[in-house]
Length: 132
Image 1 (cartoon, one colour):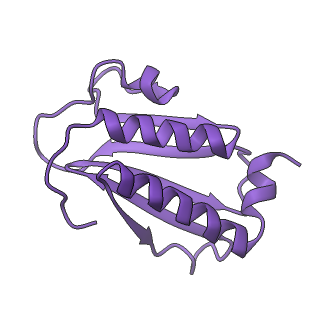
Image 2 (tube, rainbow, N blue to C red; image 1 turned 90 degrees about the vertical axis):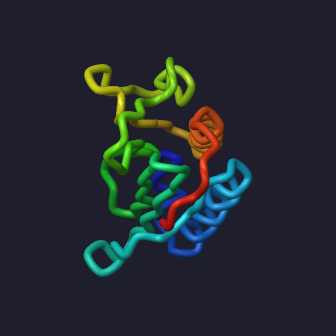
Image 3 (cartoon, rainbow, N blue to C red; image 1 turned 45 degrees about the vertical axis):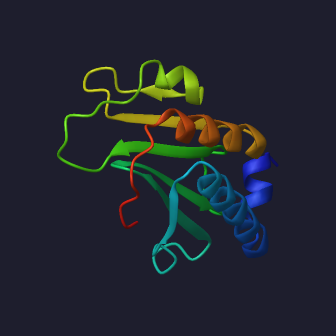
């Protein structure tokens, strides 16, 4: 059993993971809100991190077949902002190189995922928080 499946398979473990992600978000000046996905996928906790116009969606899904922790980064607004230079390297993930407004973190350990989130949030410009 891989780490993602082991850690996301139980509700208590998913809640503990979500609390650690929320702590990283607050440390980096980002808001963290839970997304209401539990009705559709009862073995899942969805989070949305927000720093300025930038968001990162995370699903801690006990039924996922991916076997990795994923963070979907995107711009949530009309402004012209693009991701900071080399954001893909910063998060150790991939970036849409066409418009540079979306990226993905994909980590096989939770520790690596927290490091990716921390690095990504710290790389984003500090702006006033918008409601999550």
